[in-house]
Length: 292
Length: 335
Image (cartoon, each protein chain N blue to C red):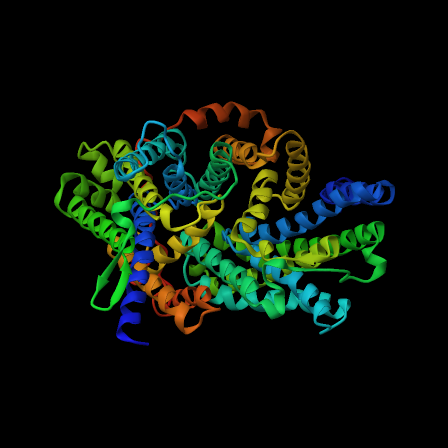
């Protein structure tokens, strides 16, 4: 394998890592703050992608339309997440974890069929906007510009999350909610509003991931279940609740997927499970997770 | 022992006996088209009871039971397709293979708990799903294996229904016997208070691993019955979403009664058939019903017969927690 091939695969691996990170970050953020595993999280990703394929009559289909959709869709998905949290999840925080699991499982079913009702069951596609469509030449090698764009988006989001969680009052409160929600409530923070905000943020990230990835894939019902398992693996690998772990987990899985395609073309999709098993044999709580 | 208390002891078996009598009656009188529904219900019921042994009795939430169920079906299908073994040998081997795989996966998954365990089992299930898709020369990939894989006697609709019923009834009786045995009681003790069970000298990990293995074996047996019913195996059987079915069925029927999942399977299958007749979007309706059950009637159908659960339902819907529950004290880390 030449150096150029390595770089091309590296880039494609990082691009899928970027998508995995955006989805897994939401899962891990929500788990950290609310101790809830959201089975319906993949649905937000699917809604983001489906939304991207919808040609809204108001929007031009060119570069401007792309940017407008890329901004509005995550916000709409975040609002859907907020509504879900207020209407449903609030009622199950104090229930045993099976009830929580079933409630989000029910939401998974509901969202899946609602998507079929709204967008139909056909395969859908979105196009890469003209400005991002071309290849980039670097020496004698060419890379798709859009992959670089996806990696850039994930980097920007990762940086923004870091600033938000480490340097702002909101982040301080979220981290306090992870440690002791009751104590936080007694300091005058409205933990209920905080939960809604965290859930909306996580849903919005998944919606952004779906919107960004839509031009590269065939958008279809069923993509919610597929991304969910991959994102869970990333979140478990990194340690549930740790954003840094989600970054590392996403990069590991993304790179194993990309290079696995070359080394074991047929079995590349099996490799990530063995990576997961290997890590968990050594560290049952994931790379950055705490034993519970 | 007085006549009265003996009668009371026996009365515990009346629901089971009534179900047996009803099923036998239906198996002999129904038309072949309706027998399919009966067979679907029985297979689902065994799958759910085997899953509920883990879920209700042991309190372990696994999202990977479809892995063992699908494995059971695949063993029958592959043994027929490749001529490895005749049906009866494969049917005996399948639950043992299912139990062996469950032992290996459980040994790994049970090192973690609660959420982690549910997600891990989900990942393992998806591993088998991927293998079934990719190992084309063994499993025929996405096409699946379909064909006359069971002997003529039980490929016949009525013969098949009777065979499925007999095996499922025996399997459920065995599971009931395990549930009331010291092992079942130990599992319940762990479910109720793991620390206290540990304090009493119970080896939690080994006991739960034993339960996981037993449940995996019986799920694989349900998979064998599925092969008899459907005469085919395809990767969709191993999909993690499939693992939700027995859990949902158990919850609908009630987790903490042994026959709850059986009632749940009847309601689920008949309800599914009824909704499908009205609309294609049965998942939407099912999801809404499930949500209402989870939010308002946590005891499942068993709770519908108590007035108090109706009066509490409204209160449950209104009770919004002011704050997320404090994280429960973590159990001792396992070495």
